[in-house]
Amino acid sequence: MAKPLVIVTRRLPDVIETRMMELFDCRLNLDDKPMSQAELLEAVKTAEILVPTVTDRIDAAILSQAGPKLRLIASFGTGVDHIDLKTARQRGITVTNTPGVLTEDTADMTMALLLAVPRRLAEGVRLVRSGEWGGWSPTGMLGHRIWGKRLGIIGMGRIGQAVARRARGFGLSIHYHNRRRVAEEVEQELEATYWESLDQMLARMDMVSVNCPHTPATFHLLSARRLKLMRPDAYIVNTSRGEVIDENALARLLASGELAGAGLDVFEHEPAINPKLLKLDNVVLLPHMGSATIEGRIAMGEKVIINIKTFVDGHTPPDRVLEAMF
Ligand code: 8YV
Image 1 (cartoon, rainbow, N blue to C red):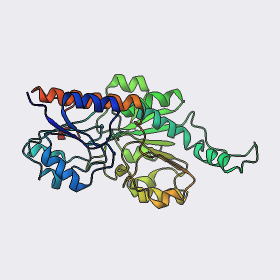
Image 2 (tube, rainbow, N blue to C red; image 1 turned 90 degrees about the horizontal axis):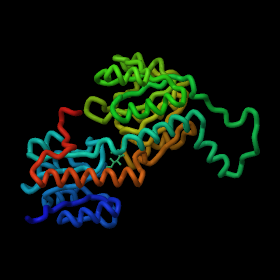
Image 3 (spheres, helix red, strand yellow; image 1 turned 135 degrees about the vertical axis):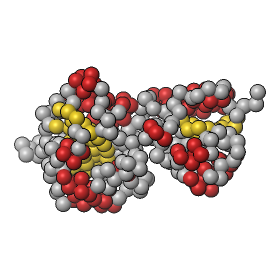
Image 4 (cartoon, rainbow, N blue to C red; image 1 turned 45 degrees about the horizontal axis):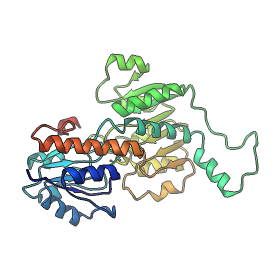
């Protein structure tokens, strides 16, 4: 049987690329340069299977010109907001992702930001490196305690729950808003309080963590109006997608002291960073590295391979994505 033509848009871990070369007629991207829309168009016209990442915009314009051979988009990543699922379905193209294997890493990074922002970690590093630290002082570098505070989690899926488990260990009490209330056992285990109204929850939290996917329903979920409901001493952390927060409004409120601080691993227009955010001291900005562990990336690649293999063998791939899931 002929091996399927698989086009991979970015560099993946060596072990994954090697295995893909063994299994498939595989075209790799050796210099790791993100593909332009023109290159992507060429790829969907040629490939039977496309392996994109979050940096590829597989929109309706691209998909409507896909070649008849393109049957599967096996995305390397969990979020699928870069793929137009509706057009893919209309064109009979199956879409898969890699859920589950980056939950713990992303939750670790969320917890790191929940600690880093109130305890001014990045400012402390900058001070030491600047050579201007004059030594310990009783009132130097004071931040805020997180123990005993309330954490509001927006999106209580796998990652939200993994954040909650960690946060409990740091003495935070767990509150959450989700489309659906989670199972009673989970609520009990986490001693979590459910808020059907996001507005009501936001107004009462000391810290807020964004852990929901970006969908049309969650675009600017944290709008200027909602951000203004938060308390001026509250912190906000986002390891999900920049688009969930109105970034301009966030920067404004942080600058005017109407919010205490933010930890952002994701941005609305990556890789561009809102210049207003760059001017602020009370923010920790990271380059979308929530799931960036070697173990996680290999596990993601394994999932991509399993999804392709299962599909090529004529079965439903384990991580098939349906529009109704989002
Ligand atoms: C991935 C992510 O590394 O999986 C996701 O949704 O945001 C990242 O952590 C990236 O998407 C890879 O394509």
